Length: 221
Ligand SMILES: Nc1ncnc2c1ncn2[C@@H]1O[C@H](COP(=O)(O)OP(=O)(O)OP(=O)(O)O)[C@@H](O)[C@H]1O
Image (cartoon, rainbow, N blue to C red):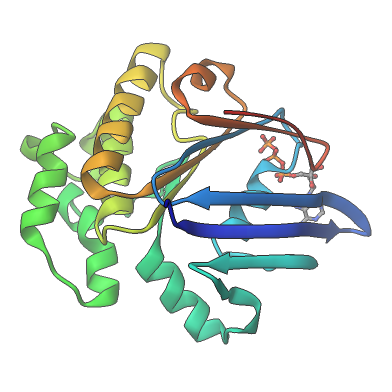
């Protein structure tokens, strides 16, 4: 039986007195490839932050491997976030004065669990091993995104959460980055949750959830 790694139940987020997420429930199995697709303003980033334990919902629960995250102290939440989740952001969020390798290694620095062999595997599978000593300013958009993917997977997280991971890439690079993401998801044995407005991504995912006006409209598998 497939285990559920993240369970979000009846999530509601109120901002400025308005519901920006309304009654959203999602259950993410350990090997899931989930796309949350929706137009601008649908609440995607808000939901991403809640699922990623970067923000707390007004109502509802987020459980990671059955553990209710609401009852955790901020320190415990941060620990769980570092150990269980990997993040990929649209604007890469690489540190400019660290090399590609050092950027990718950051999560391992934070948890004190060095695994250079795994980092080497990641950079090699992402075909950027020859860019390891380069700084972000000298990398292309696609290369920066690959470094961001390596960083997200550095601690072999249970879930990788990606917010518009291909938003800054051309269609061809988008396809390449998706190929790599899916291949690595299998190697790393992680669930993959992508949040995007981009319809081009839909056919590639096992499960697609449509978010509109803060609500889940349709679900396809
Ligand atoms: N801190 C906040 N205060 C007030 N309103 C907010 C806040 N955060 C988000 N919102 C509102 O909630 C709605 C959803 O925002 P969110 O950024 O989650 O959407 P999105 O789907 O990610 O949009 P985009 O694709 O344009 O980034 C928007 O109407 C936004 O203005």
